Image (cartoon, rainbow, N blue to C red):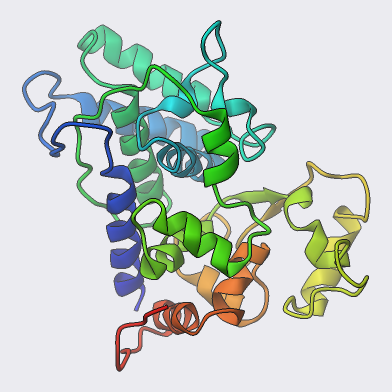
Amino acid sequence: MVHFMSFLIAFSLIAVSGKASSGFLYPQFYDHSCPRAQAMVKSVVAKAVAKETRMAASLLRLLFHDCFVKGCDASLLLDSSGTITSEKRSNPNRNSARGFEVLDGIKSALEKECPQTVSCADILALAARDSTVLTGGPSWEVPLGRRDSRSASLSGSNNNIPPPNSTFQTLLTKFKLQGLDVVDLVALSGSHTIGDSRCTSFRQRLYNQSGNGQPDNTLDQSYAAQLRPRCPRSGGDQNLFVLDFVSPTKFDNAYYKNILASKGLLNSDQVLLTKNKASMELVNLYFFGGQLSTWPTT
């Protein structure tokens, strides 16, 4: 059951992290030019996650936010300059994207080991894989050989990354723009089994501030009552809440159990169960490990 779900997540992560702006990617790319590259990345990530477990989710999220803008090219890591407006300033990243200092530490170590060899884009892809493994998730071979971007896209970051309050159709549309389908959508959403979310990302579910003033009826009300004291109608925007209250630091399939219990924290989590038959079947499949009579289609 868990193995099958892990396989799908790993497959979807490969689909995302294997994207590059040009060139052919393969796992052995640095075997001769920097043979210790992967081990060095893993070592730094392991120390960072041991110091702060949340860092695993932060690094995984950076890969997702990078790949959905111009491909997996490390454009997210660029700071603003005379010709660049950093993607760090976008709505999905501002005040929430973190872990850059870990990547800087990896890059510094690799530059001493093999100067001007390992790209930041590859470092980010490896760090996301290692973060997943260190929290109990699946492992996979990372295709390597990406080249780093020399430009960023603030508009791409604002428009391409799915917001936490997205409708199902918005989610699917943004995934399809990246060449991903409903299977990838539900599998990659499973990465919310680790990490935190800010109050501002789900407040509307507690108070339905943009609707008729009634709470979201797809959210378990006992769960909502537990959330409201630290996520009031106003204020507390940056207060953090675990995405998976069952096992918040373990990469497992409890995320899908939460959705089935109407306890998905974000709207973008819960709509996987309530708004589309194919995604609903996949949520059940990834938790229960059953067999689908037919492969889901939208």
